[in-house]
Length: 342
Image 1 (cartoon, rainbow, N blue to C red):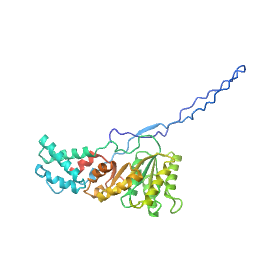
Image 2 (tube, rainbow, N blue to C red):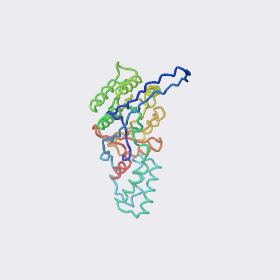
Image 3 (cartoon, one colour):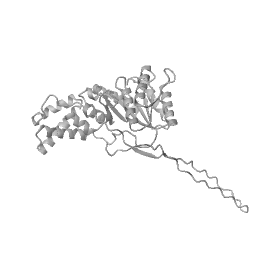
Image 4 (cartoon, one colour):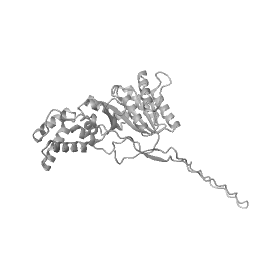
């Protein structure tokens, strides 16, 4: 994440004093009706300070593509099958193999190490995106993250890990438990909020309207001068039209108070192409800005990253590689590619 700066409010910054000037009394001999001029309200923008988030690596949780074959010039055709099995897709797999062959021929690479280095470079170049960072840089505080996804993909766990990561970077975080359809969901996110040192805003009554909880969460963050609001949503199925309408309602009530910085779609990496179908369903309604790929340590189908980014134009921004609160990292194309071919 070198070169990317994240910004939050400088807590000890005080607004600059405004010098008040006594009005000059009008000259009695000359009375002139002044033109009514309405002075614009003075808005003091908060002073921002650059923040560096804790560094974490996901490489240890990425499964290598090469557990069964020796990687040498004679086996390059088998590479296409391996990539297809890893969910890279047929067309992508063929283009990657062709590029590896071309670069190997040009450079004279023959050893396994040389060929793997070429493959890693090709994969990384295809995965690199300029919009891979979380939107924590525009200074429009509080930053509001809306987290969506179906049940069982690791959405609540992701919220807890993300909140913990941010609090470690000295951000103040509010979590809104807007998944009010399941009482257990509120309890789960409350547990993660406590572990992460975040403030929880939950439903006041059982089954409270999720949109009202989302509204109250942002309202609380503004009053507390918090940096981040993370809103949990129901694990709605992508074919439930009424629930998708509810998701759109949540978005609209949030935007009455603050801009939404990110809409993060949580996907289970082990679901492969089914995850892509979920992403397509959510993309338009929720206006998804980034994907969180969970359970990457439990699958050899890491190629789904290619499909998501190429077919949907949505960057993978975060990855989860375990159940621990620290098993979480920014998606890094070079690190990911290196882990796949190691």
